[in-house]
Image 1 (cartoon, rainbow over the protein chains, first blue to last red):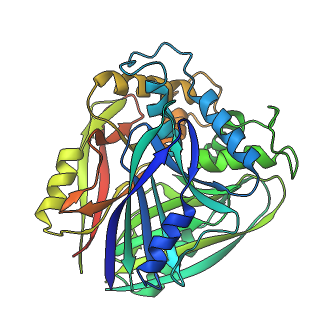
Image 2: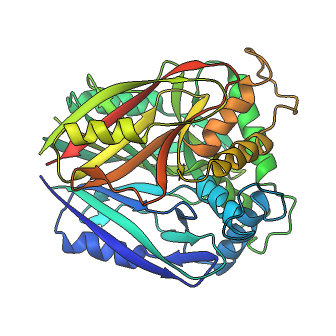
Length: 138
Length: 138
Length: 138
């Protein structure tokens, strides 16, 4: 039984989804662990992680719109230190979650056919985001 | 330290919750691992996993109604490839999540008294769903 | 490779967030595991776990308000066994989630600078909550 951990840096272009499936699956493959558990963890409170369809880009646009509507900028939030997109970004991170654990089978994350892993940037401006990866298995 | 992984197939009868606590706990028990970590992962983007009360069926009905209201069919979603329940199903999967990790103590998932594990089908029609199970421990 | 598991008891003063970062990080440190995976699991269906900003208390107040608005008491829920805050508490637990897995690096949970771990009490009255901790690594 072995394990590995690493920080992956993801540059986001502003609000929206950035796919990281390829980077994450590549990192898993290079660890040469056949069966195990992969954990992906977003080290931020205004960005998050989701698994969603990687085929039709309209799914991502609808998802972005729904998240914005569910935690809108328009309410009078107390916390506005960094502008009107500050507090909604925190709420959207809670709504969508900052962590994913995925079984690894045959040295690959056991994602379904249509599942992709995305960093979800909730701030309007580009950000440098850190994602912690951990893999344990044998 | 040992581990095990398996794909569990769950047939859903259409929209709503399907309890899998018994199957999952039985699989853990048969692995003969006293202390460890169980991960349950739904390999789909229009079905999800939740832990919820397994006593009063009204809790499940209210939960189903709330999820439907929070990500309704009535909005004009761009993505409608498979009908009006297609995009809402994706949103409801994000809202509720596709993965659960549960500590195993005394060879059982350390669920609380009222906690059950459910596959949450978000499409109207019945589906064959795959849930990946992973257990590591000793 | 080693592991540890323990039940942490958290007394909540009623609805709202209770930070447990210090207790959890202290427990990890005392296990003397340099690299690994920490899992925190809430054994209840009317309380949950979130990671959120631990700096400005206004973030917590806005988060509490948003969760209340997103799953309000005002709707006519079927399940009311324990009063009007009963069913909304279940919904808020689903909305925010009951489980977190966090990579451990240098014997510490790899949280970002502003990330704190919170038990989120969704019932109006104080409760005794159990949180299962699991750590595996070496």
